[in-house]
Length: 251
Image (cartoon, rainbow, N blue to C red; front, top):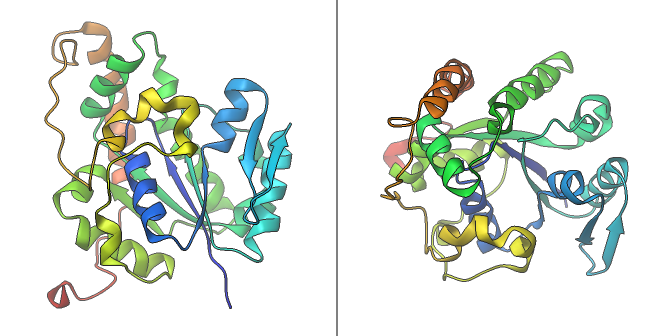
């Protein structure tokens, strides 16, 4: 049976963990939650193999080797946020060729407001838009391309359409039951649980109406970040496929 290895590359505060929660609900993928980010932050990462063994990995290359090895016999879903530049992605073309690549992006004002509420001293580079574009350039150079690019607003506005197209473009079956789930924390998120409270309390893709005391509208530094981020976001958004991968009239 053919196995699928999909990467969801995202920037922080883009609803990527909610997307991962949808994949977990499917139950047919072995999910890796931000292994590169974890290693970058802590110097090691513990991952569970598809067979259930707990492994401690001590290098970016060891993470890449595991993904390549496991993808030959299991469906793998890698969710990674690119607030950091992981050089392994730019030199391990064997890893890039193993994966089907997808992006998840979000409008900068929402991203910045949410990020500031979690981490007030973040740098512009941590927003991740530039790192996503750099990864896109590498994929283009290697003639790999992107299977899909999703905008978070479109995802919450019409999850059935967006996810069904995503499944078609990545070659997996669409499961309508994956669009809703029971609230609760996941062990995968334990290290950074405070960043995932919203999705832990969620039951599906919903539009958040959270009000932040500090925003792009009332903070000059955040406004400057927004002004720099917007053209990067618009460039990424231009990569979104303009045609549906299936006939929406059948939904």
